[in-house]
Image 1 (tube, each protein chain N blue to C red):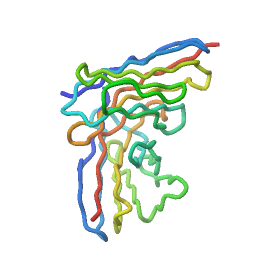
Image 2: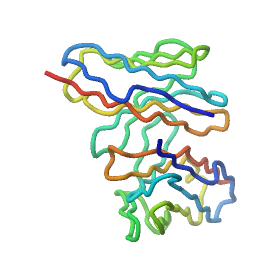
Image 3: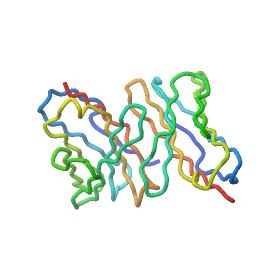
Length: 109
Length: 115
């Protein structure tokens, strides 16, 4: 079967760095997405990786290793507003999205 | 875990026809279902929120007469794209929730191509 695994919850301190991991097993691969979702809001797009390596975008970076079926989202200089759920999703060979359950990130002062 | 399915996964239709997309929660009863549209490498755009047995609430800018939503039961919601045009081609994703956004479970999406 297809599945995406990511931690259920993580806690980090304001100003610190946190890495949210995502491992996947899917039928084919057409890219991996990271979304941020604040309570009461729709998910917002953070990143898209289709090739191996690190994509940096401001305080957020996303890494992909296709051979390992692994990605991570790295958040630097954490701010209180980064408290949210982070969703990992993989597009499979049929261009269907396989969603992770999301990681709830709690930022403490 | 909670599973949400969508059918069809992919559909190609001619301009002017109507297309129905189904969203089902397979192992739980969803009080609320959400319909999103995704543009390439963009965020999901919420189109509407539907609660079982009541009319859907549409987001600003979404034509309710064009995107008909029916939430007939606690496990099924449908989105009908009426008189589809090429600009309606997109990836439509539904999610089903138990209480609020924090407990949404997403479907695999439906890719609509209008010729």
